[in-house]
Image (tube, rainbow over all chains, first blue to last red; front, side, top):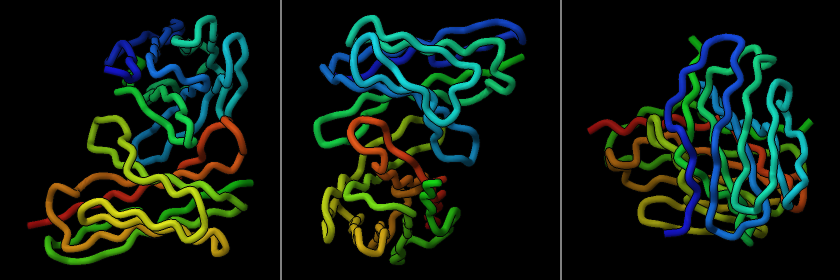
Length: 111
Length: 112
């Protein structure tokens, strides 16, 4: 079935460590996105990529990095520079009508 | 600065009642989306509204868009417990594939 796969679902990190969240899609979509969700809040855009080998910062890119080496993959690295990384991270891709399709999410907790 | 505001942010209602959630946005856009999120889960697409006057209905939910007023509504008819969730509206204001801007969500609890 077509969709977006995020891994891991749950991740614990010690302070000072970098972690990478995986996002893979088989929908053949060009544009992919990373959002962050905090409890009781909406989604905030971290990074997005409209095409392979190109990506742009969203509203809260500080402390994060991404790569887009393949159309299917858009991994997000949460670096030690991110001061408050505990959150729910959602990866999405955009369909033809501008609609976003989301993965199941990755919940990151800093110990 | 773009703002997408939902009202109310929290709503507790009884089964069988009708209610409306409002989504206002602060800049011109012809595209608005509604999503549903269950606790601990991802977002599920409900409605895609792509033009002024667009109306979509699915079961007990109906969404509409007034681009001149910069307002979308999500109307719930004869609510049932299974509709308890958080509902988000999102607006495409950047153009192209620059992503959607989300409201803070409306946490809806429907009590028997």
